Image 1: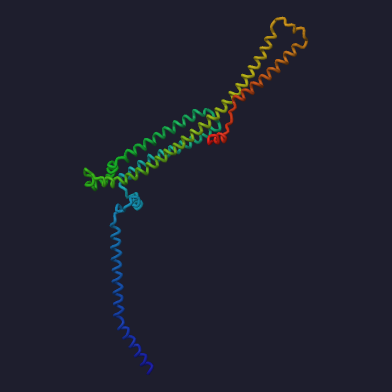
Image 2: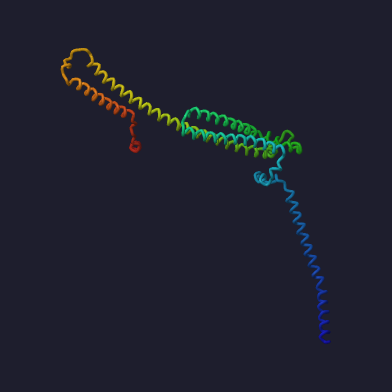
Length: 306
């Protein structure tokens, strides 16, 4: 019974202490709720401040464009971008097709070499025609880029929603702000067109190199034919000299050689030997005349230094 009384008294004391400490716990819970509410208010105000930022408030326009989606562009700028993209894609595709055809033709010309100058002339005409088309497109883009007011007026949506910004006279600052986005679009397509022009210039250089190689081969063949023609001419000259000797001895005149039994053999052998040495001598002279003299570049440089 004593133990039961002691247990009951202990529970009563603990319950009293718990009741006394409960107000303090309630105060702590209220403070935690208040601090949580303050944090929610602060975060909501920060979110409101961030959401109120305009993309045009960025100082760097390139960062501005990176943070915006292209679908947010006005319809008229999307239309301009789509049209110019179609044009640049067509020009780029035509350039690729022409490049493939030119490479195939150049490889065929290097292997076969039949009617090479005429084919190369046609290919160069095709490249020049396509290059003129691309350069005309570049000139049109540059004409628009040179006029900031025209680029500013490309923003038709801004012209309708904010007409007060376009009342004449319009300040340079407003024109610059309104023309930034169209200018970036046009400059991007201008760079693509310039890359296409560079590709065509490279293709023209390859055609010129192929034409030079073909001309060198033709010159080599022509030189061989000239050499053969020269050999035939020299041989004809030597034969004409031998014929001259025979014509001299063929005259119906008495020269007392008719009585000599070895005269005929001597004349024939002497004519053939003389003709052979004449042929060799003329070939040697021709070789000396057609050989370039070697220049001693190193000695010439030293003499120039002295």
